[in-house]
Length: 520
Image 1 (cartoon, rainbow, N blue to C red):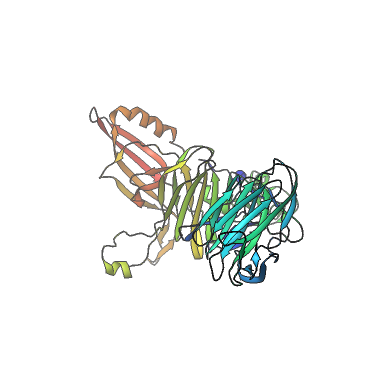
Image 2 (image 1 turned 60 degrees about the vertical axis):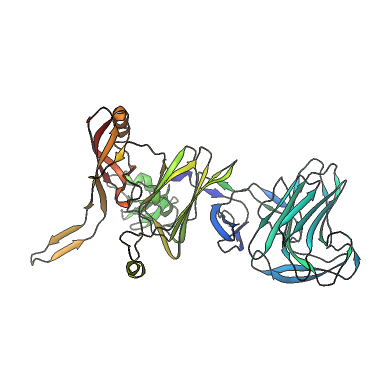
């Protein structure tokens, strides 16, 4: 799969919220991608690029809870999902009757589906349920039990809850008014029945009320005195968290020697004393006025080179819309503590998840070596059997907490089995460093890149010889990933087949040789 840097973009005309790796609700700036984590089986996992349509929170003062009938409210009594001490405690009073906070009343439109949501946490003392009541032309009721994690609803279109860490839940329900008019949304305490005598101490923590048009809840939108709209996320075919800040973007003007500018995702440097040429034009002149230094940092992982590296502090993230069938990914020149790959189908949700720690265990066969041998990282590896269809989105994350994550090359594509690699295959390195002796016999060493080289001995089905030959011919001048054995890093090579031959050894199996030289 060819990645074109011109297809990399992301836009959103407003801020937006997402959960970080620690489960804290953060706010992304305008045009900043949201790399969202989800809470699953007691831990925050991810990230995946969060892409949502435009939504408006119709409730005002979303973080404020005001006492009403049979309740007392203690403001800022617990830590809210955004990490602030702003979650309010709603406590029932020692009165007989209903116990609820102030109603949120809006005029809603007939036939339009609305979704409410609110963050709820179990409170002190006796067990109390959260009850959400919608009263208009009809009455809808939803009951959530924080301690048993049970939810039931009456006349709601759909409902559910999302569990977060620290005992917080986001409860939601959708409903469609039968007629246009005033509708009351009420957050209420429940003790088996709506009407009961409170004990003066029991209650729930509540925060972040939201009402939006749509059939499901989306990310939280904070409001104050008026409704707030979160703009739609508009991703390109590929989105990255790595900024394109290698140099300023080129604009028309006069530039002096040594100045660097970005044009069309490439970095250029002025060679002439001064020039008014555009970089792409200046490269083609004789003599050239600009020098092309290569693609910018986010796109070095896709420039068909391994020695040019994409880097970013802490983590490198990509979200790629496949647009074609992909069942394998190959990574080269990796420096990271962990790698995570997920595939999301727009209809089926997440269909694939792979996590790995690229630490080599080669030669580690006793406790002494396990405890004291230097830690070595696997730099080149493949992820196979990836079910990414035409409409799937692939999210890739390389994390290195406290350090700088690096990636030399990322290749996505569809595998083709040519045969079975055999013992007898040879591998070696081709080094491009210079090692020369001076007049006194001392070595002068200039370290440069190297490439992998392999001679694969392969057993090929005799009936498939012609098909294998056609495949090799098709890719004879295109860099592809060659895999001898996925478990052996040394036999994973990104490069070209420089020579191919077959000895038709028998009617069933024939012997083939592939000479492969890797990129550097």
